[in-house]
Length: 243
Length: 107
Image (cartoon, rainbow over all chains, first blue to last red; front, side):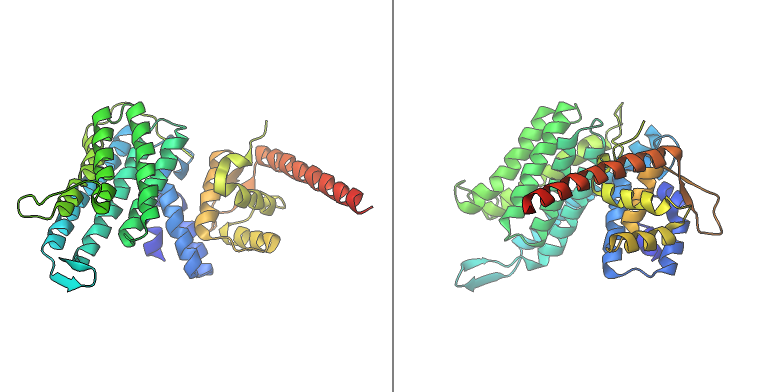
């Protein structure tokens, strides 16, 4: 139980942690309650101003949190590339689908990398101007869509939701001055290249002895870099989104 | 001045139930949870409960009292009571209109 409560931000735990633990001691949580707590912890991290009657978290604290999100996103970029390298070196399989590299061993890296990207996406959304509903909707769609896509890459609809959400978030980030226009353009190109390469509409040839589709997937790491870059830069004025 | 609970998004409905639960006196988290469940007939998750409590407290609709060991009771503020009254009157009007129309249709 205390592990679930520890998912909440420290200021939130300082205010509500004891009474929540007491409640959980009185009524042990069911499976649904545990999911509800995880969702609540995510909500509390998205709305740090809820934690108490005081002022919103100081700029320094927010900046530190965003820097952490940027670092996590960068680590995610490394994991993504690591996953691609593992997939490139996977065992060659010959079956009814043809001859290809079996990349199942890369999946944990890909999933973890995408989950880490979600942290960066949340940090980016938090830095949007207050009331940026479209940007927040885009962040939710991008985070959930990409993570679900990494869990089940054959469900293309989740990837599409993630891509559209990312475009929406990126447009809001450009509008608020958080991202330069080229960053959005570059990331949209990286996103578009994936379905085009998979469908054969984008002719990709081997480069450096590597299958072209893996090159396209490797280039997808641009997304992590675009998200991480402004989070790692010193924060100037921005309005936090409260509840 | 009252506040629109609909601004609270997915926490709007739980918040309304919590305000009703507190309308007959202060309660702590577990008591609110069980009361809400008896009123609504549906379970209320602990994450949702505290998400809603934090929002209500932030908006000045409820206030926390001195904790009794680790239990902290909450009570309605005057603004919370007014807001709840307005919301319930709105719902009562809605129910009256619906029932009257149903009655007209059947006769």
